[in-house]
Image 1: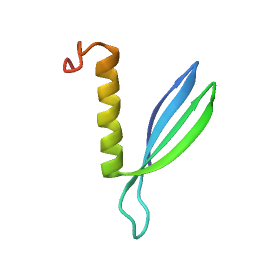
Image 2: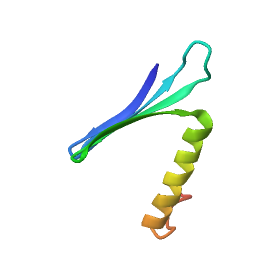
Image 3: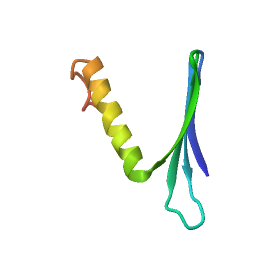
Image 4: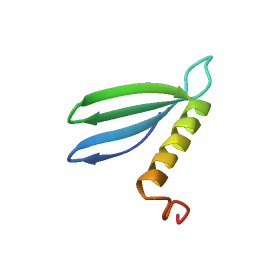
Length: 70
């Protein structure tokens, strides 16, 4: 299992790459904040859809500025 995440004063987001016997790889997402916490296990296509959706939200939040400047 490989973990990526950052701790912050307002909460924490971590992602895990999970391999299971007989199943394809899964991405576990764990998020905590002042309102509570949540956990999801996603297939790789679901994780890609989530990343695309989050990118769209970031583009909306910045008015489309700087989204391609990485």
